[in-house]
Amino acid sequence: MAESIYLSSCNKLAKVSIIGAGNVGRTLSQRLIERNLADVCLLDIVEGLPQGIALDLTEAQGLQSHHCEIMGTNNYVDTKDSDIVVITAGVARKPGMSRDDLLKINAKIVTEATQKSLYYSPNAIYLIVTNPLDVMTYLVWKTSDLPYDRVMGMAGVLDSARLETFIAFELGVSIHDVQGMVLGGHGDLMLPIPRYCTVSGIPITELLSPETIDKLIQRTRDGGAEIVRLLKTGSAYFAPASSACYMIESILFNQSRLLTAAAYVQGEYGLNDLFLGVPCRVGSNGVEQILEIKLTTEEREILQRSARSVRDSIDIALSFL
Ligand code: APR
Image (cartoon, rainbow, N blue to C red; front, side):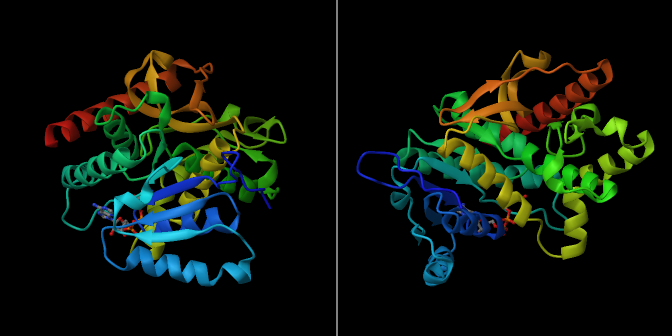
């Protein structure tokens, strides 16, 4: 079990506020406290919901033997002085709702949540989970005065985790030996890079046929949809919560993990002024470095296409604000 991180000499635990007490928010809360990573403030617009979840989780504290606190609230004042703010608030796309409708609703929810959180936690690192991820992450940065390296989006870790799972299934090897690499936007235009995906250091291009790799990549692209189809209501939340937790751990413990995050690009990969999934070193200062790895011409084109699609959605979202 991870040790707790104490941020000051007065033995105060790190504080993570999670905006949105839906499936992802509550699962992430559970992961954080049960692993003794941080105290959690869980906020939702629905009265009673975050309080009920917090009480339920607190009643399990003795049984789970952890010493972190969780509070549920509808009031942003309780998020004061957070070290990290995670934004999961939003609505899911419902039948009959266009992509633009979703964009409009979530843009409003996310920018309001940012303004209110920012007032009480101006120095926090902001981790965005609400979809469409790359666009929402941009809006958080654009509508705040936050430095770009203190804002990041969670998607690449999740997409990589999904690809790793399918590689492990296919080869019958332990997931612990598999390392995936997925760049680009969180969506149809994500960019898995097989030659950088390895099993104990061996590129999967040495272990699997191109046809099998294509099949695994397609399943990764459809990863979210596959779960939505099976669940029938709602979308994935266990792996998304674990992915956010993984990033939070790297920040709180200054682990400098090299992972894919939606980060602000300024010329890297020939891209500018947007947030997109790129390999980043993540530590206590947020996104501390973006690594520029060699891409083929075809991969660069896919990344450019992914960036154009994110840019178009950003422009639409900005027009709603
Ligand atoms: N302020 C605070 N909370 C809000 C607001 C708001 N303005 N608007 C909605 N919420 C809350 C809802 O009340 C709900 O509890 O956000 C929560 C969203 O939870 P779910 O619908 O269960 O969604 P979840 O599965 O948690 O996913 C959250 O993560 O992976 C992405 O696509 C997913 O955008 C979605 C987000």
